[in-house]
Amino acid sequence: MHGLGTIVNVIAIIIGGAFGIILKKGIPERFKTTIMQAIGLAVVIVGISGTLQGVFTITEQGKIDRNYITGMILSLVIGSLIGEALKIEEGLDRMGVWFQNRFAGKESNFAKGFVTASLVYCVGAMAIVGSLEDGLYGKVDILFAKSMLDGISAIVFSATLGIGVILSVLPVLLYQGSITALAGVMKPFLSDVVVSQMSLVGSVLILAIGFNMLEVKKFKVGNMLPAMFIPLFFTLLRNLVLLFLK
Image (cartoon, rainbow, N blue to C red; front, top):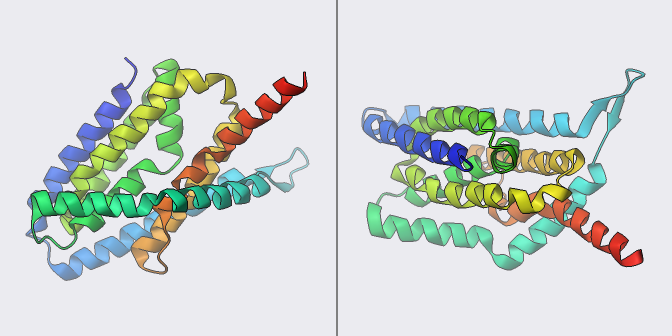
């Protein structure tokens, strides 16, 4: 059943978020702050490890070689321009505020929880590759593993940031569900190189999310989301040019 992985992912976030809400009142504020810092550090490490894994390879001679640097830079720049023009980050913020006004009243962290959780759950290699494998082959191993991780993190996120974390399932459902549904159409263009480049850009964005959580610097990660799909766009454009030249 195509889409099962995303459905399980959504259920895991809801269950984890519900547990976090139950635990929320029993956690002192100073513990919440420390926990969020710990999660921020963990997200930074995940972003760094994914980025290094995507950029560096070991040659047959045992030397370190770099890959996809130019493509990564172009993807981030072009994707950020597109996202800035579309004002994706502002849209996520407005959605979070709308949900807050409708469901949470004066809960101060609602919008922050919604936006932070949405970005963490949607950005990254597991979301992209897992959704593609689900749509192409019906394989859900990656999304099941992601579901376990997301469910556990949802407990901590909702315990510190509130019920907005649970509503992040809506962007997750739309994002992963769309990739799964379109996987068959994109299959001819999804080479290992393209998927690796998309995953690399996703890892860079995860690193930016970690910096946001640690309040090192505010990155508009939402506006950078289109960057993950620029490698696919380049492949489509190249194929069209080659077809035109024949």
